[in-house]
Image (tube, rainbow, N blue to C red; front, side):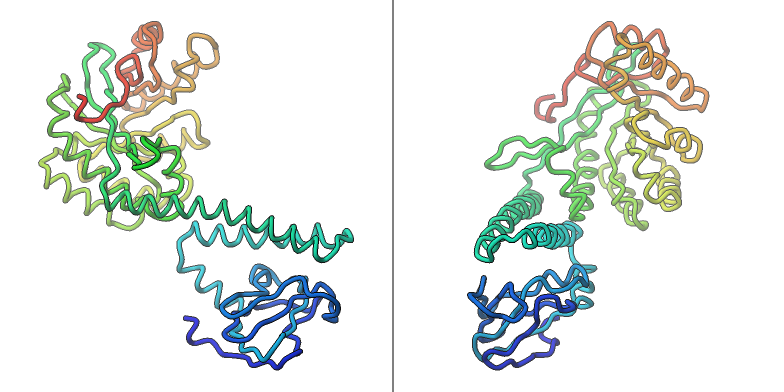
Length: 391
């Protein structure tokens, strides 16, 4: 896109812009060099010198505030101006994480300059502080972008794995199904928790490929896992991301996978959090209805921790309520948690849903849930998540 931009030619000593002037673009130096001054007249010792291939005036891409420095050509210079409109168009087409990080860097840099310069800090000291500040941000950004790159490599090199945690029928104690939980076998960092990388996959859009990989691996492994269940309606649970509920692609892909691995749709349970319903309720309803029409069942995960639980239960075709472990783990020590668990079970049953209690870790909690007529339990009491080869 840059090849279509105009060039501007400046002679030695000519100003590109002055401190305090309106800022609406940045410049790439195609040839020549530019000195940067803190003074509007461009007098004294420059605080910076930028040459061919470098960019300056980039803070103006964030807002229309006055220029915070003066730029004067040190020699004959050819500049490529980058208008804010051009950058906005590019940002709309780039990865969300890169767009977000760029805006954060520019905003923080602008804020840093506005707080530091007016206090009378000497120009050379200010320049050094600005360099340190920018360097620290660059380190933070580099780490995040490196993580995004590693995720892309992990998908290509098959570094991800699924761990399966049993979900047991509380009446019999038998395994009724499993929840598929993704893990990352990083070549240098070892086993990485999903909490440490799924947020990045969500931000970059990599969650789409990762989500499809998870669904396919779970369907493939279910052929073996199903043999370890002792229930009349066995199931495998897989988590869905809000980003996967876009268009009709998921329904088509899922139908293909179920047929490929000969998995009955009724044995696949798709777990959702309330954020999916909040972000785009109409789109969610349309796609979730397609998934249930396909034969899959839906589970509302982490029930009780969101803001629209009752509305979600009423509006969407949910078959299973999963009560969050934060309530299960304290149900015997706090009356409030105990009441929340008991009331949630009764509510779910009145709506024709079954209930899974998450985070069951002791026999006392298990017995109490049985008395409350909870249907299923999941937690370390029944088994920790393990890879299929360890089953």
